[in-house]
Image (tube, rainbow, N blue to C red; front, side):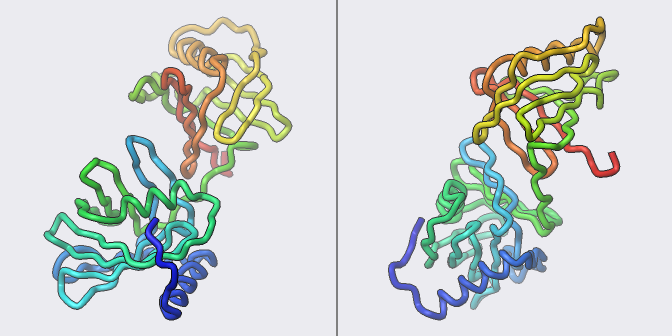
Length: 276
């Protein structure tokens, strides 16, 4: 992350004010019309894509672009998630821009992995892809910064949430549950270290050990109904997954992803709403 050892007092004040506003819930995410070329306004950072991995942005991560002296320049200020930063942006064309980092604060923050990745991506030549409420900035290596005018959905907690399985993951692929099995496989991880739910047909109970970003299910105790067709197919897949050892978990909004690091097999599941 580029920093300056001595920041001008005015810049420190601007960065501190930006960080305070985002920390207090002032999302200000309202992308505005662009001037000569490029985009302006304040945007929420939704996520980063780095070497095929998605890093979910902290709530405070923001990017603001103010029109500069000419119709193809902009002054950028923002927040990496904890530290504030400035940059100069030049829109080289309708679909490309160059970001030149300025100053940034240098606090020790909780999610330094995201902050470091954001700072590394937001510099140099970037391809700009605009949509009505979103902008994607892509580096020459194919990594991305994903921006949105919409406020981010708070991440659902792993524990004490009813998760409904909606797709199965293979090695780099995802497939929806077959017709007849959709909405039937559900599970909950309890605060007492337990897990319970339905595999799509039979109910199960197990021990669940959460260690950081991984979870391990103990041996499953299940009811003994004979399950055939799509329900039986999904049940066998989930039984094998839950019994395969340590799984990596990641939550973005209301979506949970569980994957086995050994072979990439896994699932995605949606958090139940209050009405459910």
